[in-house]
Amino acid sequence: MAKANGIIKIEGTVEELTFYKKNGKNFVRKKGGVSGERISNDPSFVRTRENNTEFGHCGSSGKVLRRALGSMVFKAKDSQLSSRLLGVMSRVKNTDTVSARGKRSVAVGLTTPEGKQALRGFDFNANADLNSVLFAPYTLNTTTGAVEITGFLPAEQVQFPQGATHVSLQCAVLGLDFSTEVSEVAYSNLVNLPLNLTPTNVTLTPTSVPTTTGQQFFLMLISFYQEVNGVQYSLKNEEYNVLHILEVV
View 1 (cartoon, rainbow, N blue to C red):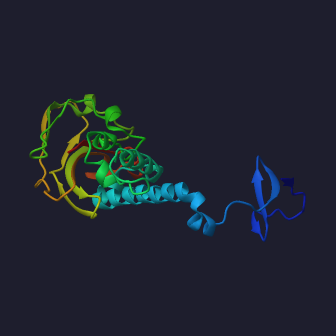
View 2: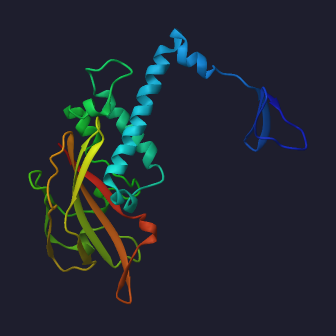
View 3: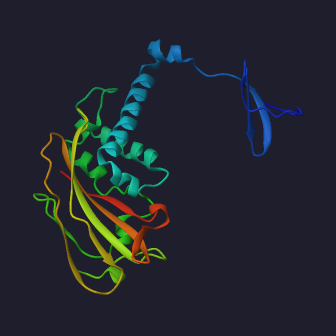
């Protein structure tokens, strides 16, 4: 490694030299590493190829879940969602104890209690997880997908952001088969309430419970709004919204 002292500061690779910046200083080093062709063909790198295959599969599985949920994800997500999903999908894949190394899958992992547990309780927005936002007890009926909150006091049982005047609650049931990528999602009614101390019995019932192969995911979405002149607007690009996996069966 050498320090680059030239007038023109270059970043990147030029022929066999790589220029980069570290701690405000410019350095240059000779390009190295193992070629992609060797990794793809050399028997010595069989473990690397297996790891790369499973890594790619876990990344794709995260995309499959995001696509299956559609607009719900766009209403409640953080900037690190893709990498966090990659991590949890890797944990699910690791629960596949029957497939050969390099062929372990999320689909097989989710057939195990440990695989389901890895995704149960996942928050799509790490900045607004359900347990730090909703303080009301609720019940989930996995037969109908219905979520009920009795005597809900929005102003007292919700940690709401400054400026919010209303909160909306909705649940959904997603049927998803990771092996075929076939999915179906059913949404509940949406309950919108002012952030006050008026007790309300909330019942969120999906239109159906998908019966596709694979797993069923039960989710809750909490969104915040500010009312101005009778119109409700999403609060601060929805960065305070919650999307949480309640259960996986």
